[in-house]
Amino acid sequence: MRLVIDASTLVAELLRERGLELLANPNLDLYVPTRMWEETRHEVSRRLEVRVSRGLPAPVAARFWDAALRVKEHSVTEVPEEVYEGSKGEALSRLPRDEKDWQVVALALSLEAAILTEDRDFFGCGVATWTADTMITWLQRHGLS
Image (spheres, helix red, strand yellow):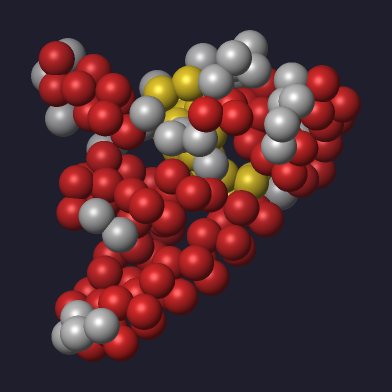
């Protein structure tokens, strides 16, 4: 299944064991706009630093960081804006509340993909959306997990 993943969902799932498993599933073709990956990388690093300051052992945080980078490298394709910028106008017209997320919708339109998200701003944009929970359930029911 071809999916574009938004930054907030990617951050959340990279910081969970279940999320790392989901993102590494070979039955999913995952894509992220380059700008969103840059935001994700920064936010994952920041959240791990906060967790270390609250008592998470630094070696555990380092393992999560390494796992996140491995999963991204092997399972999530970064896509530069040039690939989907032609769909920007259409994407903006489908996002009445949060225009900063236009890249996710434009990429999904360009790739004829669904969106993996927890962000309600994407719901009803005319592109199929999946949450992590529904995707995990779907994969399990179809023997693909």
